[in-house]
Length: 276
Image (cartoon, rainbow, N blue to C red; front, side, top):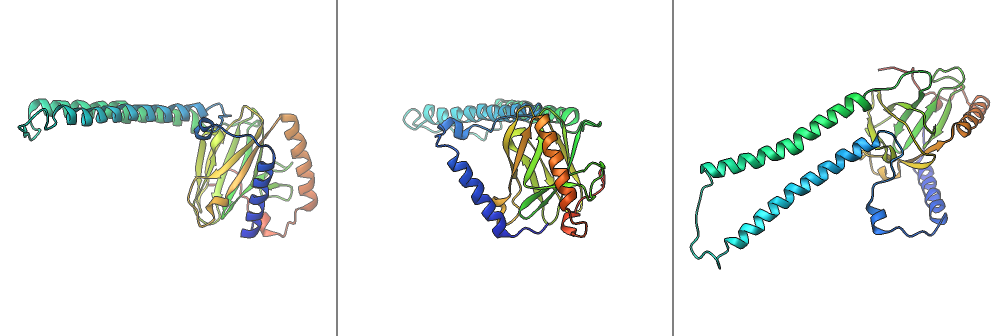
């Protein structure tokens, strides 16, 4: 799909104006720095690992600061007129260094590796299957997200497909499977409220899955610097109740059948599901 820069910019300005006029609520400092609300069943795994990494690094950083400023105070010129020179190669020095290095390695590297590997294998790479899984195709481009749903025939890239621009509509409580690629450069499909993202790379198909626990409108962002107007690449995740989603899908399919131009190649960017 060919989307001009001006069209994308005007759309973003309209969205900002809508948000700014929707209320005059002033956010507190803590609300400004807090992560976005987690609306997924597996996002807490990412958040826990992030928090653990932050706190354990702060712990070791605090020890380093205590040592640095503590020894600077205890062994200042005022308290020790004669300087003591050492190369730090005595046995006790080597043991202290080894102990600290091993402590950092075990508490940071090993824990992160073990937990992240477990979560990837058991959750994030355990892709759901079955008829209840909602399948969606995403084509990234500078600077927009093109989103495709299979129509009534259940096949992608046919005349009854539902094609959206920057608006991913899903039903709450249902697993969503996304296959994606890029039209031009590397982008990163990022759902902050689901704590998940994956790179959309030209020439290959990537995939991710997520589910939601709460209806509402949430942000889709590009987490990869993809060009001069990267900041414009903002989409919306719309989570509806199953009833509202079924109604939306029915209306969108009817509109697609009535308006899709089979000769418009910009609308025929889909691919067979499962392609590699």
